[in-house]
Length: 500
Image 1 (cartoon, one colour):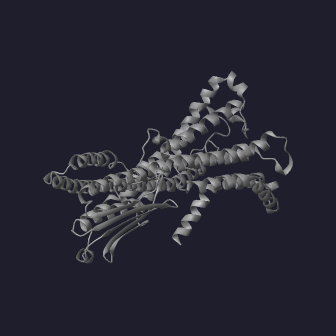
Image 2 (cartoon, helix red, strand yellow; image 1 turned 90 degrees about the vertical axis):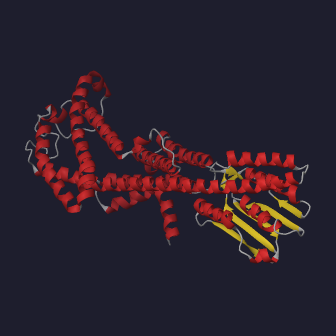
Image 3 (tube, one colour; image 1 turned 60 degrees about the vertical axis):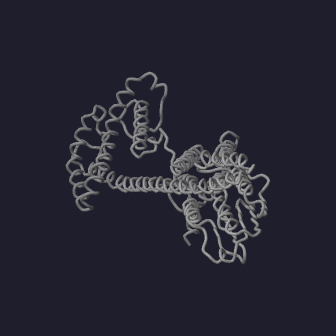
């Protein structure tokens, strides 16, 4: 049930920007009382839904592509292509073609859907960066404080432009929502005159938000509980609203019959001013709490990611000395026998150590690199035991398109020689195979062993480290089997591969 709900949510979220624009476009014509009525809403909703259908399809395809395991660059390119087709090319046909009637696509509807969709995909990109642990110098742009400041700045500039375009300013209302660029060009100082006054209004709103977030919520609520928070907040609102209203009434643009304060009157104690501050407090408090909760969860996730990364490094450091110890033992044995293969073994060891040092510390390597490493390791081992051991290797011809964590496969092969071949003087065999089907690696290592060794538990610290690494990398999405099978030992590993 949890998987089903998660799937449905991931499918619904990309559709929300277009659905929101669609429903707002349905409600906008019936906001006036003379046009209100459900008899107008449903036909309008059906017609607009048909117009918005390609936009919904564009978002749905983008959301589906986002869930795929293809390389991120390919996913971003595909999402961008469908977004351009759905959000730009399709509306352009109606906006610039000579279309009329119920098929006409309105500019306001398109702009709203375009902006909401763009914000959604920017949010997805930002969340992807956070999950990867990447921090950018532009990350501060996504903070709640910055977003609120940008919105207030946009409102301040827009309101100042509207007042400049309206010759009567605040003295005559209602004020038409239009911008006269000619009047703006001839009255730049008037624009600045309105701008600083409206900026003061915006500063009061941001100051109320700042006090609520950084003092009332983080100090009073966090340290003393809900009731003191509510009481202190109400006391602050009751104390400050007449003082703030008095300050705003002193602004030059408010020396009119209907000033630009919530009550629209010159009485600073008017209850409408109190209601506005109370409404702002009621709206911003849940938003602040939700945003702070998300930030805390993101911080905890980063800490957990760092802990996992540190543990993986420790496990990696345990594996590398173990491998080096066994290889040096092999080299020592060949030197004692004065074998002509010792120089070749040293070269093989150098290649292996180069891989461990440079590639083994990387988060991902290609499957081809890992299999090449195993080929070197197997060749190194066969130099010492080829007189009694038959080796069979079956690897894919080209597997450079997939990647996985380094040094995951070596432990299974190492155990085949350590616990199988080296434990008996009798003829033995080792069979190593790898296959890729449906982005899944099927790796197996089979080796002959004595009856006593087959009956005894094997693996040691190496196999336990491998299990722990697989658990940290893949959770439960893998299969590792290592157990005796008659007079043989069979180790099998199945896991999902990532595309390069």
